[in-house]
Image (tube, rainbow, N blue to C red; front, side, top):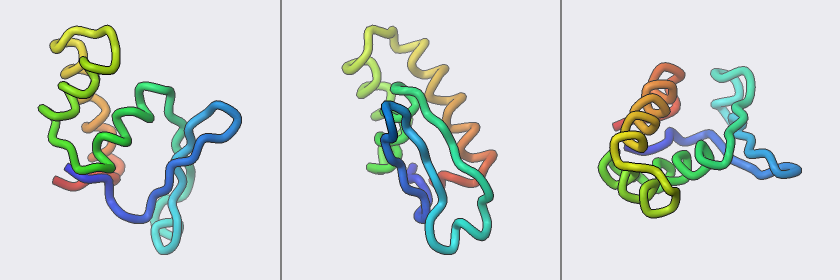
Amino acid sequence: MKINKGFAKREIAGSYIVVPVGKKSLEFNGMITLNESGSFMWDCFAEGSTIEEAVKKVTDEYEVDEQTARKDIEKFVSLLKKNNLISE
């Protein structure tokens, strides 16, 4: 999976913000605020990680079991797909 082109993530005053850039700003009106774990997952998919790879990265980075990580990642991916932010 890969985050679609045209989105930039920035850290501003301790918050993580995703904004559309270029042509995407005409299609996507708004911005997305991510918490620390959301930012971590965003980076996983920006790198092209699969769900399995993201689960491994999250369980390695955070004190969370595989089942919880998978549930959270699948919910995150579902939201990204719903808003056309990610492609497989």
